[in-house]
Length: 485
Image (cartoon, rainbow, N blue to C red; front, side):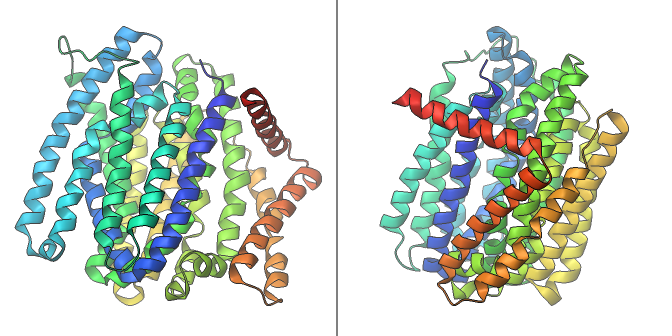
């Protein structure tokens, strides 16, 4: 079994690639395509993601938990995987048919029909999105190598083929390649772990839980994806471009905040299964500390330095997205805590219905606020609705965790992190007092803010968790480099 440290390191590489590559591509593409072109592609991608979500029918969540339970028994592992993949193939076929019926029936899609037809490939590929399996068996090294390789190829293709505003189709094809490349690689490697079975499969046993998780996934997707769809239908593609730019920058950092928690889900599942509550408390302490000690300063930094982020990464055409980015900056810490209480605790504990209630509440408030605010405030209204939905989901999820599970949460870390993050304000004031290139100012802001924040946490608040995580990662990196040499 790979150690938590090894898993964390490889998952961190994977998540860093999910931050750095989108950061580069977003900065390049938004400048080339402009708000309207960028918004158009984002709308098509979000529209297809709804059908991908329906085809997945809760398997990405359910699969990690169930695979983690039987990963040491190859026969049970093969049987479980075969059952889930057959369900996924069936649902993908049904949803793909429904997708094409929608885009060919309604005239609204006909102006950009070629994009939506190509988007069908993303829906078709759903059954081969097997990260739930590789997470369950803790193959984080494979996930990171695969993802980084595909991203490098896609990045090179982006610079070669996307040169003007007329290259929308090439940009979309590169997005499709990124998905298909990962999924084909998944299918090739899966033979190392399992043998597909065709007999004695019990598909029905998974249906009740999958339907509950499907409801959870739908409600999550509605309040995380419908914002873009409603904005596109009720406002315009330019507003979608502004909103997508702001949210994309903020959400790029979320994978980093939940990096440790993602790795811990199989161990948390096992500790709950074995009723080892002391181990469970230890794992949750680590995850909560990691989320808070990184999530709060990242959210605060995104809020304070929103002008520098928008102007550096997107250009002056997106200056109207600055306020939108500041409104959505809290999403980093909110989604991080929501992931802890929902995906790391409620679902592994078999309390998926409680998480469903939380996400339904978040979905409801998000949709209502979107409908009320978009006409007057456009992307700003959508930003308010999104944050409100995440606040409600996080609060209700914590309520059920506190009610059903005897765990101690170190809330003092939240106050310490907020106080330490205040150092960003004088740093911003001093840097803006001197004329300099906006990209240089952003880089200096990140370096100085991170340095002083960590110094305050380690040497003033004596935060051992941060110090231990910091030194363990550094030691592992140096040890890995030594082994390579």
